[in-house]
Length: 123
Image (cartoon, rainbow, N blue to C red; front, top):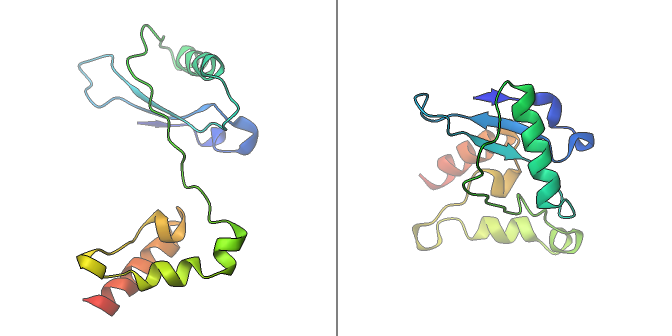
């Protein structure tokens, strides 16, 4: 895996942040780009092509593109009216527990602390 830490800044929106080659015997790679909702597919493809070129490769064919909204933030009103206490109250309902980024965004420390406390409380 190649990480492009310098591209994880808002000014680098759309640039590739990671390249992953699962099977070294193939030329197939997975690329991750953090984009906003106004960036076109053509623009993202151009940024991907440029990144691959800089890394010494080239884009010959794009097999699949998957887009998803990453961590839709909790809005001010939802936060104000108890989003997190309501989520916490769901813990254990029907044998389901919520951990990870859903409860703490992607902060490793806060995710680990919350998960540890959840285990202590329920198990």
